[in-house]
Amino acid sequence: MVDNIASTGPDTPAAGAGASPLLSVQDLRVSFRTPDGVVQAVRGVSFDVERGKTLAIVGESGSGKSVSTQTVVGLTRGAKVSGKALFEGRDLLTASKEELRRIRGAKIGMIFQDSQSSLHPYYRVGWQISEMIRAHNRKVSKAEARERSIELLRRVGIPKPDRRVDDFPHQFSGGMRQRAMIAMAMALDPVLLVADEPTTALDVTVQAQVLEVMADLQAEFGTALVLITHDLGVVADVADEVVVMYAGTVLERAPRRELFYHHHHPYTEGLLGSLPVETDMRRRLRPIAGSPPSLIRPPAGCPFHPRCPYAFDRCRTETPPPRQVDANENHQSACWLPLDAAGRDEARANIGTSTR
Image (cartoon, rainbow, N blue to C red):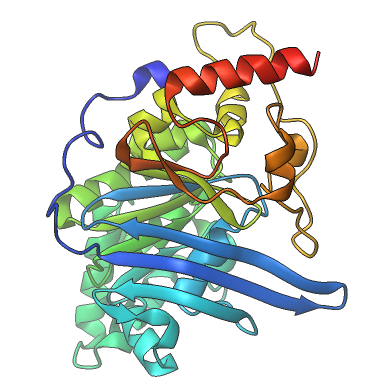
């Protein structure tokens, strides 16, 4: 899988280098009150999304990936939120409900994991797309919105869209429903598309088709994409930059090739080590030992230290800040291991020897 990573894309300068990012999330913190205590779902997350680029957010279930992006667009009711989420210079976290309604759909499109629950079962697919269009622009007639819906379904590869536009969601396959969700998300040509596990419930062939549709639309309209996933194979195919989350925090972020070939954090190493290797299908997969911590009572120090094979005393008491890796300003890791490759390898070897 890793050997198939293209050599172009993320290693080239970002479009509009030097300009401010389209979306800049800074020290985002999100918590929820529960009968058992306060869940610290997101704990100081920061990342940027450049115009026209793809940012992948990866991590195990419960790492805070979805909560982070849903909070940015105002979809986490009842949460205590702090930090900033600057979108085209406007802080979305302080925006009014009316402002967020105008931005969602028109400026920021959303694709959710479960297309069956995202599409209303009692309404035809084309009607739902049309209503979304007209909700943002009442000057568009029903006939015009219907024509736009047909064109969108055609663009995402739905066969015979002039007939399928009147079908109900249950008459679409899982892959076709996800395509319809992409069509709805792209209806108003948003500048940012947030896709939350858009291919999880699909088989491999359909997954590839859906990703291809998203890539084609992104190339055509220059849309930035935030892709939330736990599938590093998908990341290898589409991402420009990768953010690795764990226990509500960012442990590592880097350009795609840098992350796959020169990753620093032991958690990233564990994620990559758990992938099957096409050149050695007989190799045993290496799972990460243990389980993610409770976000009601997260551990002191590095959140990954209870599962980390290289943890030492400092990891258990001090939380490591994001630090620049190997003098690469685009690569940061929240880990106390040495930042240069030689020192890091030596430290890992010494720790491994001392624990045997």
